[in-house]
Image (cartoon, rainbow, N blue to C red; front, side, top):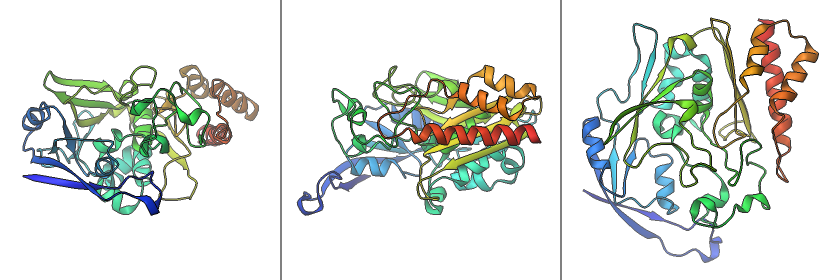
Length: 342
């Protein structure tokens, strides 16, 4: 079956836009993981779930597949199941809305439910899948508008001297993207494992190691190999319950990507996890020594301020995004104070 998606060049001014051009591709609805992997082994093939980002990438000519492989009908791909040992297994094609409203998720992993609830609009949550959300491409406007940059074959990052108010303050360089996923931040605090499958077999990747920094791998944001897909995400039972929350600061107050976000969790065993979003090319976990200090208790307000300063010691603002350091500090202070008060 053949399909074509028209595209309009987003960086052209409206009065000079060129005619729409069709980009042809074939479409296959996979019936099993093996079926999907076999079709994705063909060069220039890409997986599709809800398509909320991929279809935009096609229109922007940032993706040029010759074949799309739909993974939504793979058995178990949309499931949200708790194992007897307490591990929660979420299929990669589970809709963001279904995760946000699942009674078990809301009861045991409220930070993840809140993060999913904060994704985009109602329509996007009903279409978007967890796997697609975790693997979405960066929203940097230079990259999205086909301005030459390191990710599109250019020689430098135009954001360094340009419009950089939404870019990284931690872990940036040579590219200063921030990863846009809300669930990824919560899942990092919950120490989730990403299950991936490709022609070489199955891999289990701790989500802390799932994202590649630009200095390590400039052409993509994850460690997935060509033809490899996410099949599920597993959250250990040890991360359930306790004290959890997800906070997100946005420019418009709703329906937007995070300027800065924070997933904070104190597990039932007392361990603390603090992870920032919107500030780095991947979810940014605060140094373990700071988490340990928070977990130890007996921290007064002055100590909280000192801990936050230490947490952001390596933050480095570009010309227009120093406000993110203040936002991150505010979220950390609030979360730590509330955590210690409960």
